[in-house]
Image (cartoon, rainbow, N blue to C red; front, side):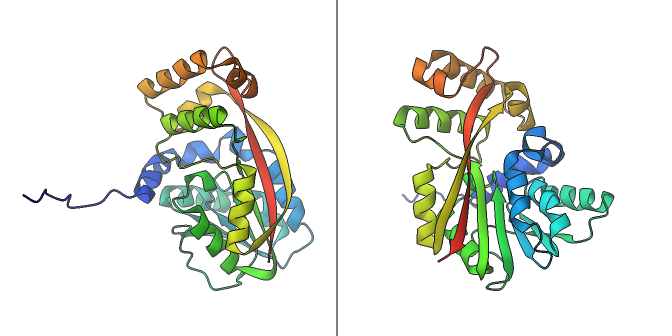
Length: 261
């Protein structure tokens, strides 16, 4: 007897939109996302290039857009969540930033013409992407041959124990999480997409535990599971992530600059 099939399919993009839509305001005002040396680095790359057009890929709360927009002709803030885009548009209007426009869609299929942007930038978004390779191919397609791509994200140091712990607590906090990649995996994926990966800047970022889980409205049972794991892990995990008594911890982040090959 043939089993009944569900009438609809719950795809990953739906999970992402459901996770981030109701939390748009929290991400726009998040101190972790609204500041950082990586944002200053991105702004520095476009300073003095007033004619540039920038795509903020997976813009979230729009922090890359707001940082770079004073230096360029136009920024397109692009995201899957309409609630996020509405929050970005509202903030842009309040600040009188009329050269930011928003557009909604998936990163795996961009609604832009080939070579239509001087810069493609993305920050803290790629670990949610359903298909990293497809998204990077699209980024390569829409960036000009003389343009540049900049990706900033969390990365895993690669050791199996550290990786398993980190991916687990990320998933417990946020079911739209896909994967944090190693720097080597990032470089290989960029090459497959047609980029030449260049300078990589590594940083460390402290996450205050309560705001980290509150921002995502993590369920209490998952909060307890994360705390239980933190308290039971081997010393090398505790040392690497600098896990504190209240659950706050420190992660690895990187910014990689890539040129079209």
